[in-house]
Length: 216
Image 1: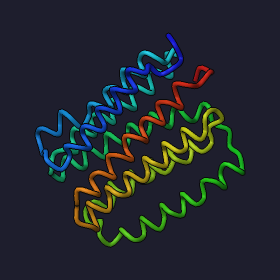
Image 2: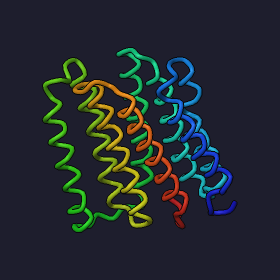
Image 3: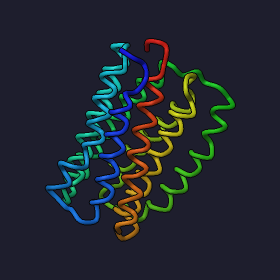
């Protein structure tokens, strides 16, 4: 298999993402349950076609499948769905951590780059704490996995800009989502920002991981 991402697949991914972002203000459940996961489904196909190492392919597709399931379940406006969505994304982060950790080398400079991100996480968590209520425990557990995922992304040796950049966008997307859930009123703009940063995050992660030259 070629190591380059298929150009047709990339085009379809961005078209699918752009279409969903364009219609996002005008659709609701259950229609968005079918349109929202399409770009991630396309990334799964791209990953399957372009990842030669079987272990890498397994964990990358696992991460994307759990992400896709999380995307679908989060279209349901219910607390149980939000908690289940958190679980799916925790599992997705575990798969990404597995991918990163085999290519990671702990370096002081990389850890120093991560410190501003950690500070952002701590300040955000502290500011939202009073509003979490019954979601305090699930949100805290999720944040721990998400933060560790970003930390390991900063330690990778191959394509660190793509992978750490994608992980930071993932964090930003979840931060905006948390704001709309616990602090601010949900708007079309916040929904657009959540999905824009999320789609870009997943694309950068797939791009960085599939470009690797070593089996992990």
